[in-house]
Length: 292
Image (cartoon, rainbow, N blue to C red; front, side):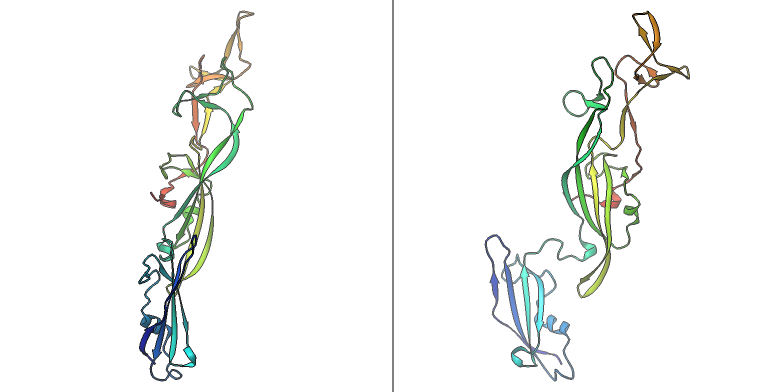
């Protein structure tokens, strides 16, 4: 059995304001020989109809792309006649790509973070100068917290093999500049990872689909801690911080934490200590970069 002739039948198209246009092309394929003892394969019939591969443009409406084909044998009760229908619509950029060729999809949104201790503030205009949060006498406020807004990126990406690097980085922060953000300002909040089997180009493709959540914190995920305490280091020895009691004209141990700098007691504002308590890893090799 083979293909004798092909005839394109009447075309149709349907569209409405606010919805996508769908166009259809129909073909009558006439077979040869004995269809009962030597059947023509469906692949041969589709190829003979000439509709092309997935994503092929409609011959009249180039913005519409092939997304569906169907085949109906025994057209008009004739065993030698087959109808092939090709349907076209607007396709997204990823719909015509094989699963492992699809670029990662990025989505950004604002989310509410946890309430965290208020230990420092931005001094003056801009965000470049941070100082410990104290009153005008240099004493620290206790129990102050604030709610920090975070930006969350959702990254959907396909992997050919199990992404162990992603799995092992749950809770890590970035050691590299990532998606335009500075080091230690991004945190891997977790990923949903699942095996997927998808039919593509008449074959089954097995891959891992990963949806990762990345939290961006502009002030860094490191701890910024005022350098304060009850003790200081003098001459390599730890000593109690002292304050002068003017009423009794004597030095007494400080009843409150005082400012420090390089281990020594100071009168002015203490320095801010940066302490990383979360493990780090390079994010770009794991998650890629967002589209421009």
